[in-house]
Length: 328
Ligand code: ZN
Image 1 (cartoon, rainbow, N blue to C red):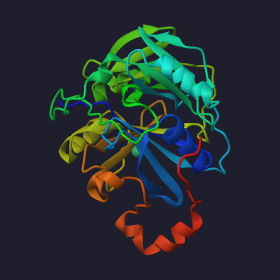
Image 2: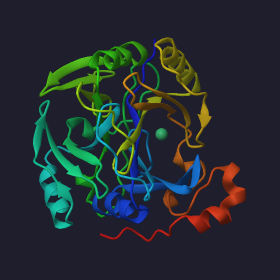
Image 3: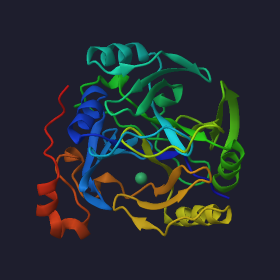
C-alpha cells in the first residue's frame, strides 16, 4: 500500500501581490518560479515561490486577494507553514528579518529543533526551522518509501546559498477533534504518530523527515476558522504519478472524504478533498513541473496562462496589478 510522500506545496492567501513578492522573493530570497493566475478566478494572480527549479516540496504559493478580509483563526484551518533552513542559520535570518522590519517572534525549541516564528506582511504565520535533513539534496527516489526532496540553490537570490530556504518543513493544523483527523491521516494517508510536545501532536509519513510531517493541536472550544488574507488555503501532498494519485484518491474516499476528480493544473495534476476536521488537502503529482512551459533560466519572468485561458490574455493582463521586481 502506498502513502503520500510529504508536502508538495502549501498555498496561502495574501494581500497585495507586490508586497507578497517583496517579502518572499526579496526578504526571504525564494525564487518566483511561476507567475500565473488562479485558474478558478483568473483576475487574481497565483504566485509560486520555491527553490531555483521549483521542485516538489519546496513550493509556497499565494493567491493575492487584496480585497479579502483578514482570516479568522480557529479550528479546521492550517495555522502555520514552516520552512526549512540549514542548521545554524537562524542567527543570519533573525538579523536579516530585523534589518528589513519584518515581524519576528521569540525563538522556540520544537521537538528538538530550533524554530523562529515570523509573521508575513499580511498576517500569515510562518516559521523558519533548522533541520539537518536540509542538507540532503539527493534526487528523490520514486516508488514506495521514496521521500527525498531535491533542492537547487538560486544563484540570483539576495540570500547567500548557505542560508537559503531549503523547502517546506511542515505545517500546523488546528482541530476541534484530534482523533477524527489523526485516524484519517493514519488510515487514509499513511501517517504515523511521532510524538507530542506542548499540546502539539506530530504526525509524519516515511519516518517524518523534513517536509513530511504535520503538527496537530486540539482546540475544542475555539470557533471555526475562516479563510482570509493571512490564512493557509490548502496543504498539497506529493504523489509519484497519476496511478499513485488514483490509488490515494480511492483510499481517501474509502475513509469517508469526498475527493474531486483529477484536475489538470498543467504543472501537476491535482485532487482536492477536506480532511474530516475541515482542512483542505490536495494530492499533487511530482510532474511534469514548472519547466514544461518556460525555459528554466527564465521561470517566473512572464505571465504564464494555461492554454484554455490564452484567448483571454489581454483581458486578464488588463485586470492584474503590474508587478515590479521585489522591493525591500
Ligand atoms: Zn494546490
